[in-house]
Image 1 (spheres, rainbow, N blue to C red):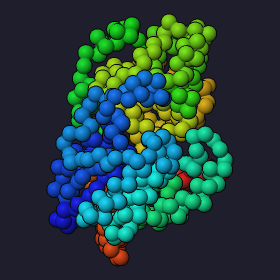
Image 2 (cartoon, rainbow, N blue to C red):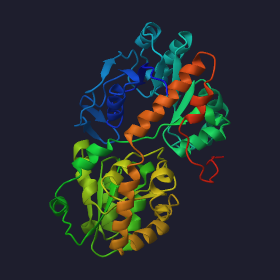
Image 3 (tube, one colour):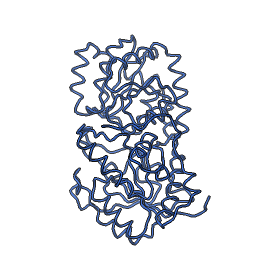
Image 4 (cartoon, helix red, strand yellow):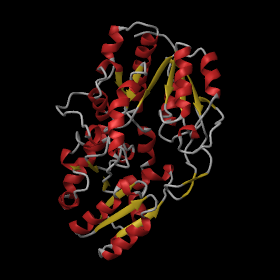
Length: 421
């Protein structure tokens, strides 16, 4: 392994609570000289989140422990192509003498193309990727699938190395005919150690606030209350399972909350359902640790790091087959905890079986905690370093065969890449 230190610029749309621990680890790694350029400071400052329908400011450190700067946005800050247009990146990349650019803005923003062109013109390695596991868009429009099938193979070949967070994303890239040596799995991870430390709480006291005794089985939903998260599927499955001494806790807010509250009443389960609203990042470990099971029934969920968080707190997870992290994180622990998205009857069957055998559920919780240790920030940083080594060599016109063959790839599962027609 080379002792070289790589000068790396990470370009991020805004501070994210899950990326900050990774940046801190990279900054402290002897092979990285890291600087992060943020295109906005949303998340680090209080701002209205239309999906949570409330003002949000994450209560964990987002900007500590690494070098960063804010590149002014010349766009309007909207979701349009020009909404994120950070022209200052051009001079920063051209004059920065960086070895590699890690771009996390997404190709639908002008900023991405500014960074790409600046990197290519200065012969700086450019790495980007996707967390997508399917070509199907969130809005279900078929024409977008066709467009992606044509455009994405060309797009991702612009990367000197493609970085993806899961084996399902890796398989998607292969389905687009990208060579496997051009794709590196850099696992989406959370700060495992810190979350586990924060989860050491008085479980009985936390549950008592919800009206849950030690004998209650507590099911958790932790996500925005948006239609694509399908919280109504879980509510209906909970009612259908009709498990005695079971409570359903909704953590998160969003436009579906009034509908869910009304439906809970109509289903006759309102007395066993709690809506906690938005819970900030530092308080979530106590919630996970005090629940017995988390369910994520989403129809569109490229990864879902809430699965990582829950497993770090020894909270097993039931997930739909559309959740991107399910194959890597849930299947190795409990493959029967995966259900077809939208299949309320199957989800109810799983809930009834799981919640009536608490001894078995505790065994699954132990396996979940053990498995998540293999999906760590350290593994993410090591994989990122491998990807950067490969990309720097490739950007300079040759490939280092040893580095290409040593990069992290997902184990073959026998599953064909999931393609949407």
